[in-house]
Image 1 (cartoon, rainbow, N blue to C red):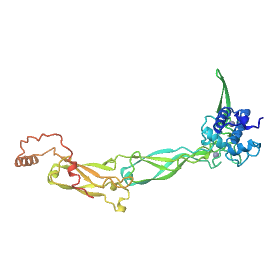
Image 2 (image 1 turned 90 degrees about the horizontal axis):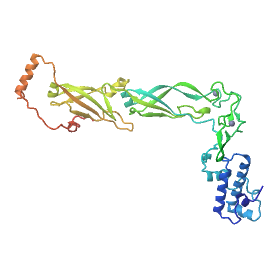
Image 3 (image 1 turned 30 degrees about the horizontal axis):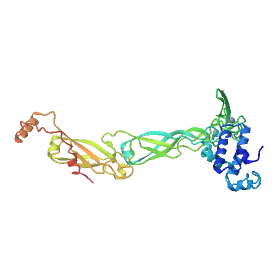
Image 4 (image 1 turned 180 degrees about the vertical axis):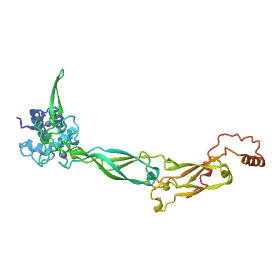
Length: 388
Ligand SMILES: [Zn+2]
Ligand SMILES: [Zn+2]
């Protein structure tokens, strides 16, 4: 076995740093354990790496050139950069995730998955927030084995098939020659260890399913599709690993009176023709009226909406701040659409009165006022009756 780093890398005594680096890179690619896991290649891989460690460090290289022992004095601990540093520099590092294949045993303990639950809330709950009790069915850590998966008193042992590597070399002959790949070890399913006596509670998984109740606080202003995140309330991972998150997705139930557009509420109020003409005041329920504790909290359950004389059907009234609170503060508006209803079933007396009114107003033979489709009167009136 050659102890000369120049010979190991196959470079001349006066090779520059770049040539040395290239030579090492070429050899490392051929001998890398991912490509050639046999022992001879691995041994050579270690040698050329040690040789590179010497020749890529000007001080160590000079020491060797002066006649020192290439590896004796320098290969040990605390000598500059480590084996892993070199590996990372050439193979992209990140804990060996790069180069393809050869990732070592996969961990038994992993983070659990996120879970999603959908719940329906009513509009007032969505608007003002609510605390809800949820029954969730997720995996929790097995208490019998504390997540380890081994029966109490026993522990996982290294896999004999792969000697703990979690993977085995597989050789395939093809017309191109031998193709060598690494495959997860079937004996240990890639874990590198086996559980000889699995926990009876969790069958070795380290977690069991459990139904539990938890309280979720739904903030004011949520809407259909909003997801409330509960950290680490999702599934516990394999091997009792950290739990994922639980997401609670909100579905807002339709409201009998109000429809919601963003943070604004809309409703329609019908008034008889006479009220539209003469003006009136009607009482509108607030959204707060739906809250269960509205009486104790002293919140307004209704408010007066004046309908001025001469109100037309289709007019809209904007009431500032009577909509839904925003998730980030502020509050939307309530837009009330007024529908003036024409009476239908008239008795003789009513008809007589209306005919008389028409005569007085000169409306017995109306010609109709034909014009382009009119714009919403909303803009004109939007601030006329705002309450805030
Ligand atoms: Zn268990
Ligand atoms: Zn194995």
